[in-house]
Each structure stands twice: as C-alpha cells, then as structure tokens.
Amino acid sequence: MTSSPANRRMHRLMHRVIAALAMITAGLLVWHHYGMERVIDLTTRPDVRRDVMDDRWMGGTSRVSLERHGNALTMRCQLARTIDWPACKYQFAISDTESGIDLSEFDSVSFDVTYRGPGRRSLRLMVLNFEAGISKLDNPMSQKVNEVEFEVGAPGVIRVPLNVLHTATWWIDYMKVPLDDTDMRIDNVTRIELLTGATSTAGEHVIELRSLRLHGKWLTADELYMGLMAAWILCAVSWPALAALQLRRELGDSGRRLALLGEINAALQLEARELVEQANTDPLTGALNRQGLRAALMSTSSLLAPPMAVVFADIDHFKRVNDRHGHDTGDAVLRDFAATIHSEIRANDKLVRWGGEEFLIVCPATGAEQARQLAEKLRAALHAAAWPAGLRVTASFGIASRAQDEDIGAVIKRADAALYAAKAGGRDCVVLAGPPVLPGVESPRQPLGAQYD
Ligand SMILES: Nc1nc2c(ncn2[C@@H]2O[C@H](COP(=O)(O)OP(=O)(O)OP(=O)(O)O)[C@@H](O)[C@H]2O)c(=O)[nH]1
Image 1 (spheres, rainbow, N blue to C red):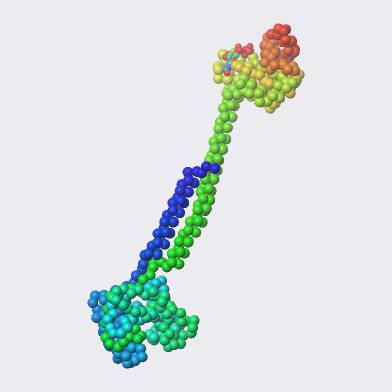
Image 2 (tube, rainbow, N blue to C red):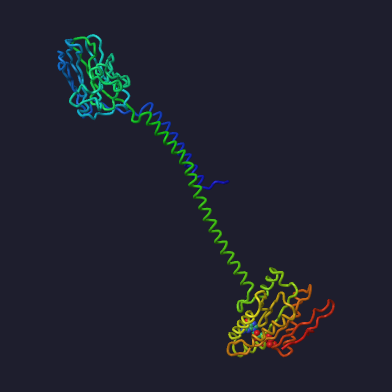
C-alpha cells in the first residue's frame, strides 16, 4: 500500500521528534552528570543571619569575636578547656520559625576556609532540622542535630557530602527520641553551624571562612529519569494514536471523495440517459424517432417476436392544415395526434414519428386482426378528439403483420404499401397488407389485403 503525502509528513515529523528526544535525553544526562548545578551561598544570602558564639552560655570560658572583610568572616576563638565540650562556632540562621529550607535535594556543602590554631585542626558541621512532633520553638536544643567532623588542611575549598551527616548521639540522649526518629533528616533546616572540633586544643584558633556553599542539582536524578521516561512513554503512546488519527482522517477523505465521485457518476449517468432520450425522441411530439426505434429494437428483442404487427398512420390532407391555418397550428395538430394515439395504445407498443405527418406503431404480441382493431380504435379516437382551430382531423392506416423470419424492413415496407392503398382508397380508412411476397417475385405496390373504413 502506498502511503499518502500526509502520512509521509507525519512519519517524517515523528522521526524528527524521536531524534530530538534522543538528543535531549543524551544532553540532559550528560548535563546532569557534569553540571546542572544549583548553588546556595550562605555567606552572601541576605536572608541568612551570620554570627559567632562561644561556650559561655554552657558555663565555659572560651571567648570568640568576629571580623568581617567583605563576604569573608574571620572567627577568633580563645578556646579554654574549662568544661567538657568547649567550642566556638559560626551560626548561619536561616529561619527562626518552624519552617526551614529543604536541603534533601542538595548533595554537598563546601567551605573555603583557612584555619590557624594549635593542635589538631578540625571543624564540626551541624545542620539543625526542625521536626514536627519533636522540636519546639521555645527550645533551640530540641531541633534535630545532624553532624559530621572533618579535618581542615591547607587553605582552600573543602567539600563535605551531606549524606555523611548523622544524627548526633548526644542529641538523641538529650532528647530521648525513639529509635524510629533518629534518622538523619535535613528537609526542614533552620540553622547551619560550624564549630571547632570536639577535641580541639586550648589556645587561639583563627578561622577565616570565605564561603559556605550548598551544592545540588536543579533536578534530582530520580526527577530527571522520571521526566525522561514520561517523555518517551508519551512519544511511544502518541505515535500509534497519531497514526490512527491520520488513518481516520484519510479514510474520511476517501469516503468523501468516493461519495463525490458517486454523485458525479449519478449526474453523468442521468445526463447520458437524457442525451440518449433526446437523441431517440422527436422533440415536437415526444414519440420515438427512427434512431429511437432502432435502439428499442436492439434493446428489446421480444418486440419482433411473432405475432407482431406494424401500423402506419398518416394524417389526411395535412398540407391543407398548414396552408390554411399556419405552421404553428400544424405543429399543434401533430402534437395532439401523437398524444391521442399514445393514449390508445398499450405501454409495450412503440409510437414512432416516421417523418412529417407519418407515424409508425410497432405492436408486439399482436396478430393482424388485433392490429386492425387497434387501427379502427385509433381512427375512431381521432374522430372523437377535439382539434385546434375546430379542425376535423382524420388519418389513413396501413397494417402489416410480421411473418415468421420476415425482415422488419420488409414488414414496414408492406405496411407502407397498405397505407398507400388506404390513401388511394379515399383516406380515413384502414388497409391490411397481404402476406409477404416470395423471394424472386416482385412486390406489387398495391397491397393484396382488405380495406376497411
Ligand atoms: N406543421 C408541420 N408540418 C409538417 C411537419 N412535417 C411535415 N409537415 C408538412 O406536412 C405536409 C405533408 O403534406 P403531404 O405529404 O402532401 O400530405 P398530405 O397533405 O397530408 O396529404 P395526404 O397524406 O395525401 O393526405 C407538408 O406540407 C409538410 O410541410 C411538421 O413538423 N410540422
């Protein structure tokens, strides 16, 4: 089956869509792997409060101060080991309420940091998450503490993955939370803190923090895969749907075209029938013409099956009608003549205008005597009819009945001869032709049959 131009267009379009989708998929996967990075810089965000704090609120004696140089925050900490857990810390307050920010879609946090101080140099990252049912607004210690401690080496950027955070055991003890609630969660973070290490040596610790950034992707891997899968499924589903739609449209079009062709065909057939009818009909009287008789004989072979007869009818002194009353009255008489005869003959009989005022009636399934009776009936009907201009119109009739195997032309000839005899015999009468002449014997012009009037 050849495909239509619309079908080919749709296939080309679908191939382009698939190629584009494949390129977008590959591009997104590569971009997701190497880029698509979303970064929140807590050292510059205006809605984040940055501050430092020491351990005096816990009874310690450490002292901390903060210097700001542009975005860089330098914390000077005189760490005194007068309590169990001395510490100085940066505080990045994101929210004072119970609605923090969701960091679960971020995968790491980076610090651009320089650390000078005695002993082991490490920092603790604490991410405080406000958890419904556990945390209370009036108790800052009730926020879930997720922490990790990491070493700080040479000045530069340290990147800490967020999935290494764990819920601080001291916080679990302090809050006495059930086991089910001890998982690390960072979906509602209100504060991020950066503290000196748990085992830091007493003395001056100077920490310069040039940036603290959260890193993630604009789309998580799951979101990306789900989105791509949805796009491919949509594409796979829409192809057959579009193809079916296209097929339906084309079927509709061909149906409409077929219907139109059918209408055109019917109109042409009607026109052809009308043309054939016109070609076969005498326009003045509506009777068949000679061509019409030929067509009728060809299409209906039973017309000639014996017994059959032909009747010639010729209007008497018709020339006088024309001469005295004009051609139009003559035409009207011809029309009425044909109509009168038509109303008297059977549906199977054929009325033919043979020429001028001469008519032929072909009568199938009719013997000589029946044809004679018909001619007499017609003669009487003409007598009884009302004619234009009060005329009295009569006609002469010549009849021939077809002998077995006789040629129709010969039958007509005999009927014509009988008509001639009727005219010669005084008109307004019926003459029945004699039997056909045997081959080799010359046909007399005078019929051998009887005359009736
Ligand atoms: N009005 C009219 N006249 C026609 C038509 N066809 C033939 N005629 C006329 O019919 C007349 C026939 O005249 P004739 O052949 O002499 O016959 P007739 O006058 O009827 O005489 P008979 O047949 O001997 O009785 C002619 O005058 C033709 O012009 C026609 O279609 N309309």
